[in-house]
Structure formats: structure tokens, C-alpha cells
View 1 (cartoon, rainbow, N blue to C red):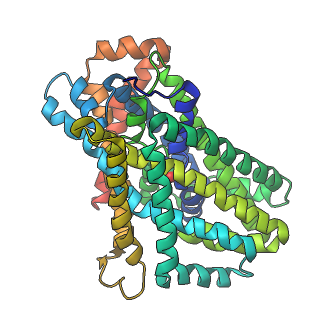
View 2: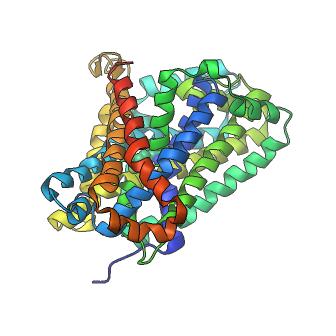
Length: 445
Ligand code: PFF
């Protein structure tokens, strides 16, 4: 049987499709708002450059030489203790866990595409009431759209690497970029644009505390899709003789530029028409629709296009979150792609319903432990704990476990003089940064 492989452009778009997701357009702007703008953006960009880019290359490398699902890839290429290193591949589970809440949020976005066609909320208060009514009381709507997300994602997965994943990304990624570019150009023409630039790039260091640092590092991982075996699983289907560094560069570049463009555009609209930047997770669902309202009919068009772009970003990432476990069952248990896709889909779909219910009045009390409900716990455990651990495992594996000569023979031709810097980052900078993040998470400083 011929093994399906991505084309070169197909791989870059699929990996960029994984990276560019709700993290870029929904989360990045609101955490930038919460942590005060410029200084936070600076720490985030530095992390992307010093740590994210290095781990992106490392993760691609493991997949590229391992050639299988993440568990088998670790096992295949670990020089010793294969039976232990294979557990590194179980990071793939984190992707399925992320999907538990990710799919519910995509459902909200679908719903917002439809409602933006007719009417927009005339004030932030109204927008807030509508949004809260949806997440706290409306089970039927959320369930309907969550089901739609499940069907779409599972369908694409059943079609495989070429006919499903590559095809979808080849269409949705350019569409997403065109929509965002168009809206960005409009934002450029508005008076408030310099204000948005100032907010995102003027650094006020007094706003940076250890929590902001940890959030910036955690987000750099999340937004680049690192530490979950997604990039690794895709890289197993790269063409022979691919240039990993070039591919990694493009993915990091596209992800970063799209986050910044989305951020600048949103803040421009919010300064020009709305209520200013800091509005938390409801930013794109509450403040933004109210700002679009002020634009009249153009606002409706923008709102629909914006939520379509957001849905595209979310769907391409979703597929990459589930694919590692789909591939795992295909490779290790000889399941058919169809069976594996459906069962993995059902997993996040059914548990996603619990996440959805945990926001609903009446169920919320049952599904809340400590200061977080089930939905928030899944978000927290995956992005704050599982991802950094996954990144750490990959950095240590490539930096210390794989034979340096082998790594050098493959990567030196691609990295040139930067090889030692990359290797140093994997061995020291990344582990130390991860360690600091974990200490902070368990409350040590
Ligand atoms: N990078 C995606 C985002 O920014 O929304 C989320 C994500 C996808 C995280 C795939 C991890 C992953 F493996």
C-alpha cells in the first residue's frame, strides 16, 4: 500500500493550520488585554523565538525520523529504554483532552456566524447578557453546534492525511488569511489604529509579574501546538528530504504574524467603536460584536466574516488535536482509519457534553471542584500542565537522549552555524524555563 504523504506546501499549511487556532484569534488578544499589553507581548515573542522555535524543530524531527504515531516514533528512535520513552508519545492524549472544550467553543462560533447574519447587540451589556444566556442556560443550541463541530472534524479525519487533512487546510488556511488581511487593511485606515499599536507594543514593565510570565510561556506552547504530538504526527507524513527548519520557520512565522494581525485589528475596532481592550474570554463574543454594531451594515458583514475565519482556524487545529490518537490506534492496534476517527471523535464529543453542561446553571454546582468547573479544569490541566511537560520531554529527548552525532548530521546542514544555539536551547534554556513554569504552577513562587 502506498503511504499517503503531505506535499511540501500541504505540510506547511497543515502544520500552520494546527498552530493558527482559537489560541491566536480568541485567546491571544484577551490575555494580552488582561496582562496589560506590550510587556506581555514582548515576553511572549521572546519565548516563541528562544523556546518555541527550537521545540518546533525538535518535535518535527522526532516525527520525521520516527515515521509513525507519536508513541511508536519515540519507541523507534530512542537508543535505550525504549519501553520507557514510548510514554513520551502519550502526550497525544492531551490533544483529545483539549478537544473536550475546544469543540464546545467552536460550537459557540458557529452559532455566532448565524446570529451575526441578522442582528448584532447594540451595547456591551446586551452582548454580555446574550452570551451569558447562551453558555449558562441554552443547552440545546450549544449541543446542536457542538454536534456539528464533531461531525465536521470526524469526517475530515476519516478521509485521511491527503484527502482530508491536507485538502481542508489547502482551502481553509488561504481563506482565513484573506479574510483577516481584508479586515486588517480596513483597520489600518481607522484613527484608532496607532492606539492599538501602542497598546500592543509599548512595554509597561510594571505590569509583568510571575503570573504574566507563566501565562506568556504557556501560551507560546499552546499557540504553536507544541508538546502534544500534533506537529510530530503530521511530521511523520512529511516528504523524504524535507527541510525541517524551513517548515518550522514558516509555521512559527505564520502563527505569530496572524496572532499580531488579529490582535491589532481587534484592538483597533475596540478602541474605535467599543469599550477598550481588557474584557477576558468574552472579548470576541461580547465586546467585539458590540463594536461591530456601531459600524452598521458593514459591521454585520465583518462579524460574519470574522466568525467564519475564527471557525476555520478552530477546525484546522481541531483535526490536528485528534489525529495523533487516531494514528496511534491505526499504527498500534491495526484499527481502520474510519473506526479510529469515529471512536476518537465520540470520546471528545461525549465528554465535551459534560464540559458544556458544567457551564449550565443547575449542573454547574455538580461539576465544579475548587475554583473551577469541569470546562475550566480541562483547559487548565492541558495548557498549564500537560503541554509544558510534553515540551520538556521533547527537548530533553532530542537534547540529551538522541545521539548528538546523528542529530548533528541531520540538522547541521539545515541549521548551519545556528545548530549549537538550537542545541543549547533544547538542553538548557527550555528545561529551565519549563521548570520555572511548573514551580510557579504548584505555587512555589
Ligand atoms: N495551536 C492551537 C491554537 O492556537 O488554538 C491549539 C492547539 C492545536 C494546541 C494543536 C495543541 C495542539 F497540539
